[in-house]
Amino acid sequence: QKEVEQDPGPLSVPEGAIVSLNCTYSNSAFQYFMWYRQYSRKGPELLMYTYSSGNKEDGRFTAQVDKSSKYISLFIRDSQPSDSATYLCAMSADGDNYGQNFVFGPGTRLSVLP
Amino acid sequence: DAEITQSPRHKITETGRQVTLACHQTWNHNNMFWYRQDLGHGLRLIHYSYGVQDTNKGEVSDGYSVSRSNTEDLPLTLESAASSQTSVYFCASSEPGWTSTDTQYFGPGTRLTVL
Image (cartoon, rainbow over all chains, first blue to last red; front, side, top):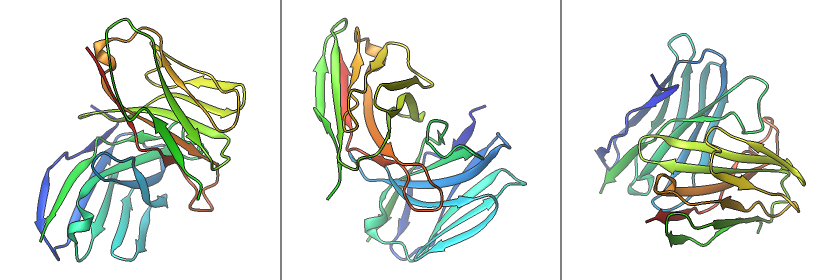
């Protein structure tokens, strides 16, 4: 079993739909949870990060962490064609914020159709 | 504006050749990282550095080396390229601190094909 699992997609939705992207993980030591967006042939860029459990909202994006289920989600409201990209989740254990122990999911490819 | 660049963007080489991928950042970050990205595997850490003269092995370091002679650059060398090293390589830099939005900033990637 991989440490971080993510449905690879592709996921196709119509413009304006609510999108739910998910990751599951096995390491209960993870405390920091991140979502990256990666456009085709570009490097990943950080969208959001959360610490421990709970929700965090930033505009049309909401990150949700359920540590009891080892499950994190990214919701995109009113999805736009410009949201079409691959979304990577990443996780890190408490006390490690230097990046050397980030564990990345394989990414979910999202297409938002006009 | 500060940025992180990689060169070349595309490289085709032959098995057994030595290859060096360049990474240059103008963020003045101490931490720099090299990852490879393969379908189904996500990003996997190859090497990382916390500052000048500091280098450390990551999860998939076999067959790769790095050196850090200044803050701005962390070149990645494939000593003897193998077909299994065909991948997309990303460089990243960061400063520590979860109290800010500063986290890893990624370069645009180098697509390497080993024939």
